[in-house]
Image 1 (tube, helix red, strand yellow):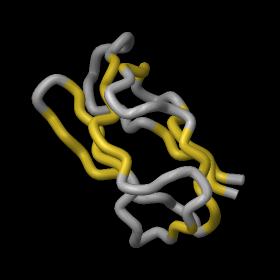
Image 2 (cartoon, rainbow, N blue to C red):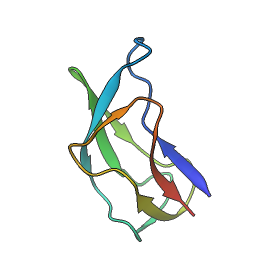
Image 3 (cartoon, rainbow, N blue to C red):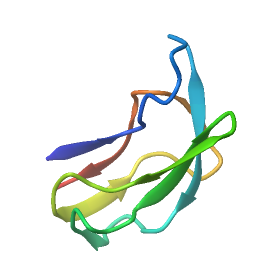
Length: 76
């Protein structure tokens, strides 16, 4: 199993971000070339791609605010 981590995009230790959009649903098959989500911190957006292939399980809802570095999905 592999974790999908919300990237650290701010130097602040307690910074949070938002999952703007999921481009996949739980149960979808993904590969490292699959765009799975867009996330944002302040005025910076980033696209998220998985590091491994497998079946994704989304753990965080769209528009949810989460700490940077937290697990937002898993791939098995």
